[in-house]
Amino acid sequence: MIKFRKSADYYGLNRTFKKGITILLMLVSFVNFAQEKEDLLGSWFIISGSNKISNKFSIPTLSILRHYKLISNYEFAFFRTGLTYQVKKNFLTTIGVAYLDSEAYIGNEFGGHTKQIWLYEELVFKSKYKNALISNRIRLESCWIDKVGESLVNNRIRYRLQAKIPLNNAFYFKIFNEYFINLKAPHFNQNRFFIGLGHNVTKSVKVDIGYMKNTFKKSNFDRIQLAVYFKTDFRKKNNLNL
Image 1: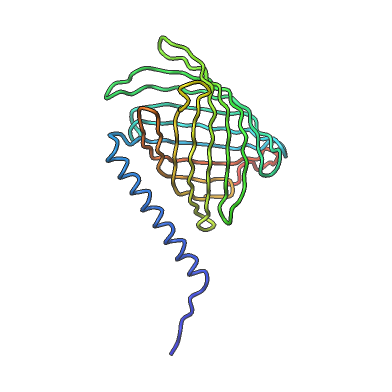
Image 2: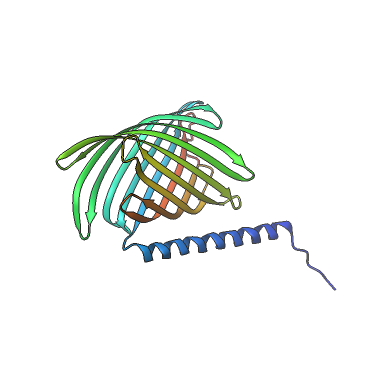
C-alpha cells in the first residue's frame, strides 16, 4: 500500500489558512456588532510613507481621508509630515507638523467647518516577543483649532500599543489600542482600537484592512480602515522597490 507523506510546508500553509479564516470571522463579527450598535459605519483611508534621506534621518508622510458613512459624507482630511531620527535600530524620535480640515455631521446636515494645525513630538520603541512585533508610541501634540466663531489651543498626549503577528511571509495580523489624554480637564479625549489583516505586497509596500472603534466621551464611531504603507530610499537611484 502506497502512503503519501504530507510535507511540513503543507501543515504550515494549513495552519496559516486556519488562522486567516479565524481572524476574518472575528472581523466580520466586529462589523456586525458595530452595525447593530451604531447607525453609521464609516470609512477611513490612509496612505503612509517613510522616506529615507540618510542612514539616520527620514521624512514621514501621512494622508488620511475619513467619511461618516462608507465612502460618503465627508468627515475630515488630514496630512502630517516631519523629520525622524533613528537613535537606535529599535528607537525612533520624530518632530513634525500636521494640518486637518473637518466637517461636523449631524443627522443629514453638516454642522460646522473646522481647521487645525498641529505641532508634534513622538518617541517609538520597537521590540519582539516570540514572533510578534511590538511597537510602543508616545506622542505629544499641540493643536491650534479654528472653529466657526471660536479659536482654541489643545495640548494632549497619545499612547499607542501595537502588535503585528506574521501569519506567513505574505500576511500578518495587526491589533492596536491608542489612548488620548488632554493635559487640561476634561482629560479623556478619545480612544482608538483596531484589529485587522495585512499583506506584504513587496518589501517596500504593505496594505492593511480592518475594523476600528473610535470612542469619545459622548459618541462612538465604527470605521472600516484601509491603509497603504510604503518606504522609499533617496540614498539610492532606485527609490521605490515595487
